[in-house]
Image (cartoon, rainbow over all chains, first blue to last red; front, side, top):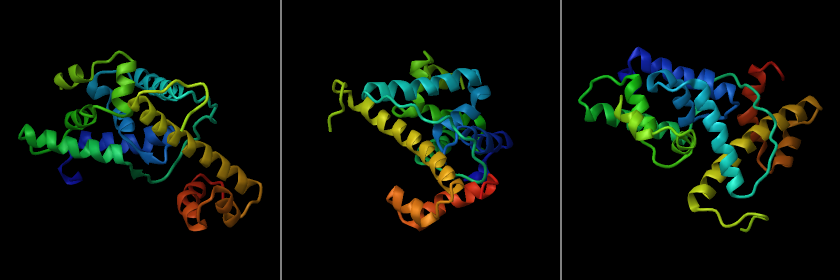
Length: 140
Length: 71
């Protein structure tokens, strides 16, 4: 699948893993890390997305009455596996490219794949930030 | 399971909370394993304290900590 990726799309995946997931100390690369790497593509400031994701975590924990003060994220280095949400997003981006009869998978297809999720961290974070997931996708 | 102080959350909120807790648990684990090693704990002892096999804890953390220059 990766051989079909444009240079931009590859850069997004590499940034998601080596920059976004690494900086957040994540153990796997997830859809929200792809979202952060796609901030230019979807036209939403990176800082806005970071804040939205933090708000999503806080709101989710609050909803079940959990109060935690976790240690700040320790940056990670080295290769990281793709987690389930990122794999699903990549699969959906391939579907999006096929649906548009595009031969290559570009950053815009990755964004469509990430934005297609109706449940999970990404749509919740976007909704909390007042960002319209479907409108963003429609503009790609 | 009932969580003190919480009214029944929607399934979506509850599922998202589980996802958030996993992310935070991973972060706490990274921090704790690194500090335990720094305090001279062995891998088998860390594994036993975490309730996982020593292969699992080694596989999950050894490479990361080596690359971070800690071990």
